[in-house]
Length: 295
Image (cartoon, rainbow, N blue to C red; front, side, top):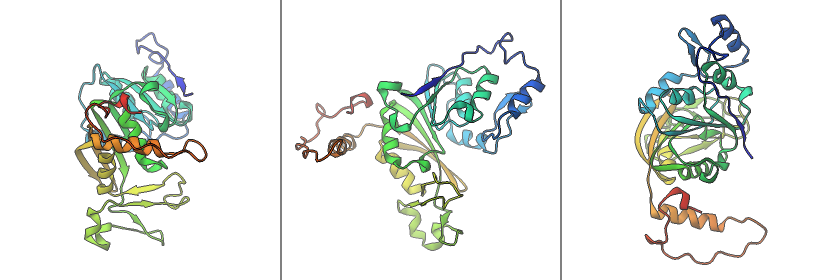
């Protein structure tokens, strides 16, 4: 079961966080060993993160106001994007695999008087029965850390409302193909035709930046293909050097849903399963038309 961490603070002047002096706020920030996100806690007081969060945020082109919307932030880290969407009026659920106290999230959550709900869970457990559905899903800097990227995208499709937005950010292969000697080359410098193929490089061990969880580097074409295969129509694409951002809209493709059902039916849940019975051709009556209807 996921572990929920919810700290309710209204941000009023009577709350503990609001009563702290600037010096005390800076001391709380300094108590975190490593910040990844730059988060403005108060005017002139910003956490010392290394990520270019502002640049990524602009590329997402999210609504200026999100009142009445539910947002899911996968791989929340210190919480910059969760807190920003909350500031815009959304109800936010933030999911990561580690406790909030192991990053800067818990401290930022306290200092901002946030009501973002933090859940310790695995992306493959994200289902509508547990979390409901969302209007915006943020999937930033996560997909290349996953052993099963397409399965993860399928899970996110399941928790998207009709016409929901999925924002995906990832490192990309186009200008950073890792060679055997540790150097990097662009795909186009090897053969210009490679840019148009759906390619994804696998990084065994800690071969990419010394990180065992850096499994993949998809190129832009592959990233588009993965999102489309999971049922998202590409609405925007922004390339930021060695990284890229894609914004997709959830769609319903009966053929895709049908083949997802076949794949689920043929995955063994025990030893020596009986072969599945033939499935009928999909029709409007037999093919689910909403995420909650997909088995």
